Length: 272
Image (cartoon, rainbow, N blue to C red; front, side):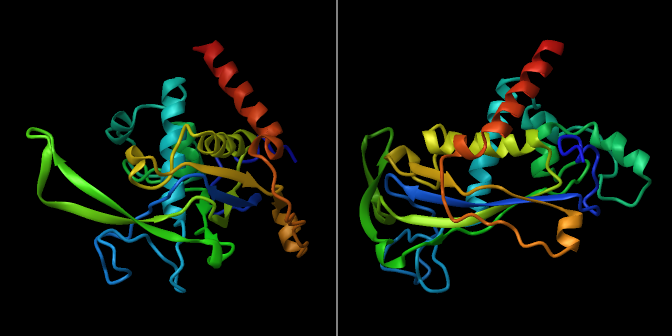
């Protein structure tokens, strides 16, 4: 099967290929992914979000958000995607998930850019995401230490502390390790490369995770396990995935897919 072309115009209803892999994130600096104003989770004004056991965690939605925003900005800068505000005002009629014939689906598919095809789009033609992110849980809760940091709100005009402007926030210390999983439905090799590129950007510090980034938080290291790639026939046969427990760099695991992404971008640029 041609895996590169296997997802062209593929509907969500058809499983042709499922790819997933384990992901490890290690904090290089403090990390703050907030749970909102103090909900009784801790003595801090701004606590971090926790799992059911009370340990800090990284929600899959937080990771997804920073990766989509980062790769979307890169694609827009390279002319591979439209600006979000232009995308939201496009007229498309019914979305690819509606009930209509496959010919109409393929016509609508052609209007989606690379980021929309993978991450989905809610406006205009509604199309669901084909990439899912699990929550990332602490590998060793005893090593996932929290600290309280003080902060003040400064009035920009007077350059003095605002009334009742002092607050504190909870921060996960550097060295905490979290693990989760990313899953993709019917991805092309280029789309896998898109995810790999965004993870590399996070690892290299082009993207930062969580809040309070202007205060030095959100720097993380990223490593991944080998790719588990299964077809519908593999799943039907009940073949167990060869799930590796060894974590390596993003570039080592996804070298082929990153190359495919660069080649695709280069060929598109030549035609522009």
